[in-house]
Image 1 (tube, rainbow, N blue to C red):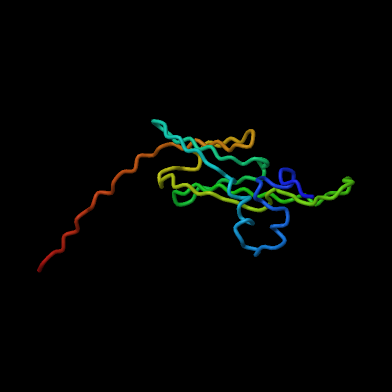
Image 2 (image 1 turned 60 degrees about the vertical axis):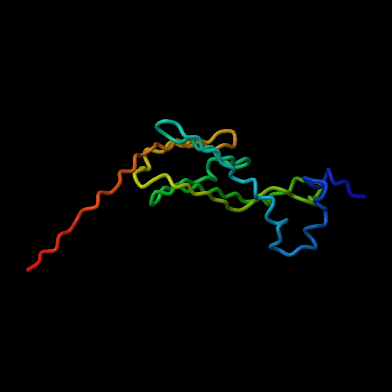
Length: 145
């Protein structure tokens, strides 16, 4: 007898679904849909980004700034060390792999202007607002002989 509340996150999520579905089917992707949820708050002089990364450590997370895009990458690998366990898993619902998000912050933002802190599974970033100056079109006159 299967008890859905023990083996799955919802009543309709069957215990044997993974055995009879195509490898790239939707149910193989659903478990990652909640990764790196982001809240973006706009203040007068900066943006505050809060990205949820539960279960990750600070060493699993990397932030890069390139061409005005702030990219956050997180990667976690499953531990295979199960020597001390008496039982065996019949289902594991921990995400292992890589995920990333990118945010356009502007070409004027410098790496040293961005402040990042990771605590309690949340990556907190402060990104300054940089005023984009419109390019002034310069006229080029062609000399007529």
